[in-house]
Image: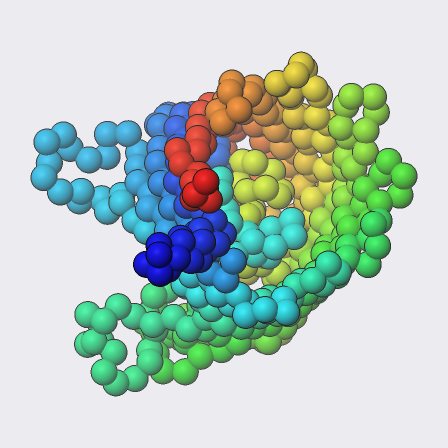
Length: 443
């Protein structure tokens, strides 16, 4: 009898523990065909278009309990045909770890999250997951988090170092020689979201990035700091929604004019305002964004060019990625005036039409005679059709065209640009849940 009672107590205890747990397995699979003839930059006259298929297969494993969460995802990102058939290894390193993190809850709203993870806030202007790029964007860092019904606070800390096989084995010194696009040696930030009311949400960001000095293409001892701080705020006025972005950048930025000098003084800003609403079943919106730039005839040696460091930049300033997507850093900035309309075509389909009017924010120089050029860069039109196929599957078809002005030719250093700059794509997205399991109490 005593043994039966002990077994019953153990069963009840285990039931209470395991019922608070959940295991999940999900797939994020997408294939995208692209036709490129002027994507990301102008192509010259007579250039042949590019065409290819990219694929991502990301398998995600999750574990959730009351005090502990963990996530692990592995992905294969490839261009169809980039690895030879019957090859016994993947020479292109297509397989990679996307995320690997653990989270502990301490009670009273406090928790921590440590490991390789996606960092995404607000409209993803400064920090975003960059899901359009099939590899995504992830950070190796530690988070300290606090949250309640009104306030959410994240404190992030990252310190980057070479692989253990480098320099050699990290036994002495801390020089970081990974010199990719804005790869940081260290990063610290605070992000606060305050739900002021049902009609107003305010977010604030203070971000510090530490970069290793690079002199004549090589990492050297010493570093410089770039500071980004500002707000993303959302308001509702009846059926109209407003979103405001306002950020400043200060400290030091890269000195592109002198390869022997790693940095120079930085003073830059971003300001943007967008309004959204509905007319019948059609969603409409529009706004502007200004990112400061450096005059091409600037002589004071300072950097006035803002850069949205780790945002989902494909989402902004046109889908053809002419600005701030692996390009346009330390340049003349950008003024983007845009309008959009989203048409509901049925229960499971829609059509987005968006137009952008681009001009430089700083002085642009005519390459032919050295005079000041017109700041107008061009107009871009984006069209995206979306069709939902299943609850977990959809297809999108997109077409974009850039109507480039002379200023764009000066900016992109392409004086013999083709009269037709366009880009088309078709993307299939399948995101099924394979497993969502929680143990049930024993009856």
